[in-house]
Length: 269
Image (cartoon, rainbow, N blue to C red; front, side):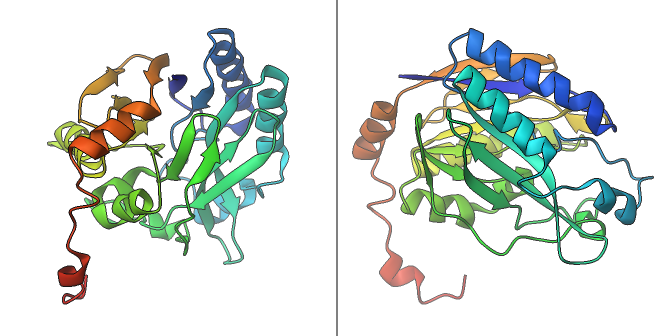
């Protein structure tokens, strides 16, 4: 049994204001005996539509920069794993990567993922400020299980979570900043539950609160039960997970095993 913390908060547009809050959340999660603390997308800072791509790129950092280093140091001091997000510098002029990272209890970055599906939909265009990633990393072995990394809009593409599950993922972690709008919360809940059910795994989805975002951070078990829904509450929520539950569910409902990949390959997916 492992305990995972989900942080739901409203990030300021100023990086220097968010970091102390983030470090406090990590300490608080550790005090409450969580094994891992997970954060939403855009935790580094919120970029409003008025901020230019150049201004955003100027504030971006590398994975070895001050922001991730401070998070890693805090993780080590408090002996807790952390899943966080950042704007990572890109080689492309005036573009950044939307990146999530995993830090272990020793303060080492053991996983990194650059968002591959940019949210160019429903009136938004992330590609005007961001570059898409080009790789789905293999699941990362952590103290709580094998983590498959996704970010927000990725939840709408079942091929990605299926690829991660097929590679051994036990827990899908999807830091998100889910935009408000008609039916959007229904989509959010349905997609998180679907990704858990079809892959027989946990889904941990900490979501950004405030600005244009809906909150509703979720934790879903492998059978589709919602274990945590943070509604519109700012702060930390906790959930206990058991990998045994993943193994039992996949045995009783062997969806991964029952696939007919020999036939699917006739189609260009």
